[in-house]
Length: 417
Image (cartoon, rainbow, N blue to C red; front, top):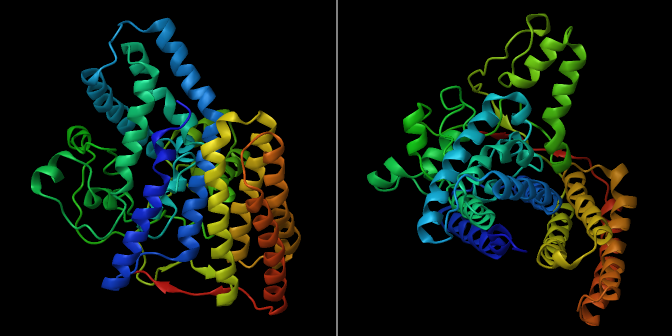
């Protein structure tokens, strides 16, 4: 299939986030911050972008295993789909658990835990490298004889289910649901950085796996969200590679190949005694504050938000049309998308030295890119190209005025409740 269920659900995701924000406006319980939410969605954009290129590898390997080594010939019907849906979730449990228990694999999952907030935008905060470590856990399904299209659909629906549980506005579901399904309460525990909550509740859809394998913990007090060593950056590219960079530094300091392998394959935080020994998670200090550096004034934040909205339209155009693009076009378009996500991080962190030149390139690439898409046969109205050109020029003028206002980055300390 050209479009997976996650791409098709993009409008639904944004609609539900809008409803959550409206509910927060009414109740005055706020769980969103603009800089954090934009970074969450930006990492999700990068994950879907990388999936365009990596799915050839992952689905391709699954298909080869299915065609060459499947031991059964299972029909494609509702019964086999129900079976693969449940078994996929079991594979997800173990892939997810290993992502927490093996430091190398943690590098492909830590992105999802970096946000210090908990709302529906966090569900979209996904890693671009997680699939590399996770997909082998689903190959037994191919050997059993479950068709690739069934596995892909089960994977998409599994991920879609997990979207709605990323909220603080649903306390508890009926007892039977809490006993069988993964719920917002159970998943809030999973995102907690408090020692009592770390490495618990790995389930995707069915919490029964955690109950069976001894990793279940009930939600008691409200968790502190995030990771034990906060990222302290709005850069979504850095977010994807920060843990790998840390692993590289530790490996460079190790005294043997054996220790280097242990650093990769032991739990996150493990290191030889001569490098300090295991870094055990500690209680969150009473004076803990969320990372919240931000642009210095409302005009800069409004500019970033408006550019993010416009870029989101460009992202959607790519995901819904990329199947007909050549590799060269995908790479060029993807480069613009990566640059856009980077720019929003730079703007929130007010990296003025980086802003002007890169942002001009990004803005002028919008109408140029649309003209290029027209030239290869994509049916885009001329009015859209003209509007994009006007938007790019107006944005350059707007940015110039913002930069003239100066200002230094604002560090707003927000006490974690």
